[in-house]
Amino acid sequence: EKGGWSSFMAKEISEEPEAVANTLRGRVRDGEVVIPELDGLDELFAGVSRIIVIACGTAAYAGQVGKYAIEQWTRIPVDVELAHEFRYRDPVIGPDTLVVSISQSGETMDTLMAVKYAREHGAKTLSVCNTQGATIPRESDAIVYTHAGPEVAVASTKAFVAQITALYLMALHIGRVRGAISAADAADHVRELEAVPGKIAQILEREQAHIEQFAGWMADTRSVLFLGRHVGFPIALEGALKLKELAYIHAEGFAAGELKHGPIALIEPGQPVFVVVPSPRKSSEMHKKVISSIEEIRARGARVIAIAEEGDAAVLPKADEVLRIPLAGPFFEPLLAVVPLHIFAMGLATAKGLDVDQPRNLAKSVTVE
Ligand code: BG6
Image (cartoon, rainbow, N blue to C red; front, side):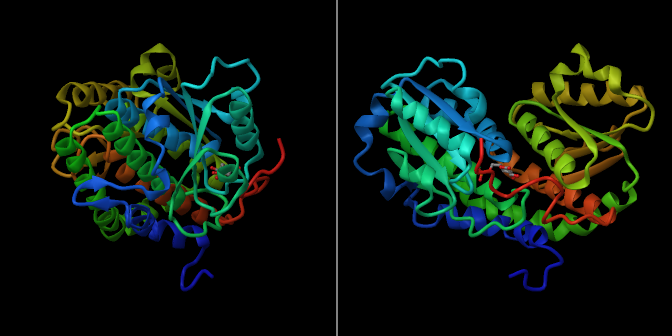
């Protein structure tokens, strides 16, 4: 039930902190990741030389975010593929390939068929799923459940942050099994993960009303662009997808570095562009590059809405609007930066008088190919 909320989507965004906290619950002990579901699979993980993540829609963007941390913490190369593209090109897979599927419902036919294909071709399969006993986890060798609770609104929100959390737990577990990451480093990442729910709650508390009001002012907008770099890139894609799905507005996400190779031609005066700004504390080089992307588009008249870390003073004079997120360690910003984008898409669709829970032409779970 919706409780006092105006929509399931509003309720589910408010549950993003819990979705992360519940996915972590019982899986961390003294700074170590403990995933009982993965007991007895050390040999399987030791034998993996390649990971392919498959999913559709928002779940695929969770996979794209996860790729950076999985590679870093396990030192296993990771590819992310749309499930419906995966099996139509004779992919090179075998017993040393781990195919990680991500699905909220566990019933998405495209994803299920890709998992079956992977198994039939000898790959190992691991399912990240939010629905106990669903078909995809039943078809997989291993399961890491997300505990986001039932998600009703068609556009996925709390499941997305739970999926990234589960992928990070999985990566830390595999990284430790393979000796690719030290106990101390893993413990640092676990601490960061444990701090995420409180930080998302802070964003909801401090920024939600502001973002909704601001989205309301943009109700007549016809096109919105989203830019990001590194882990901010899939977040830009997710921000654009949400706006298409919910507000029926043309929206596109780009890698900031790609701007000069084409998309900058789209910038005309007044064009709103969201920019996910990486932390200056982690990579001053990446931060500088994104700031210079902002300068380039602003010089051409773009209206820049930056999502930036608190205390990032360099952004303020460059952007028309700054949405603040709390400080977080490397890899953890996407779990925060996505929240303003979820609120924005919901706010804009609501301002247009649209049904945010049941957008036209879409279904929560697509059980046909
Ligand atoms: C789409 C939904 O059809 O399926 C998206 O509208 C979702 O919100 C995607 O991300 C994948 O669904 P699932 O259940 O496999 O995560």
